[in-house]
Length: 101
Image 1: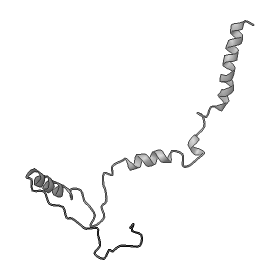
Image 2 (image 1 turned 180 degrees about the vertical axis):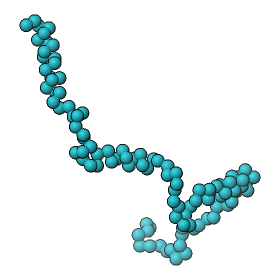
Image 3 (image 1 turned 45 degrees about the vertical axis):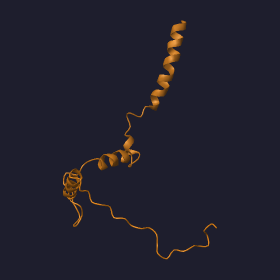
Image 4 (image 1 turned 90 degrees about the vertical axis):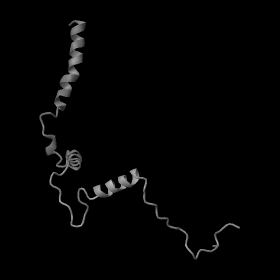
């Protein structure tokens, strides 16, 4: 045999040996019922529900639109609401035993 024929046969031998490892003819999903579950979950949470059900008293579409429009109007007319300040100190605080001297 020639050298080229030997090289060709040596190169083709691993391909024939690995041909038995082919899983394309088997149904992989039948092995594990949860196969592909994460893909289906991610697709489901990214899909918009065309007919959503809202709880009674819950936020509805457009609820905050009026508040946002009023806030933008106040901002544009320079009549922004003042923030309420809340004190975080209590009236009965004294020097504790853990304070530095």
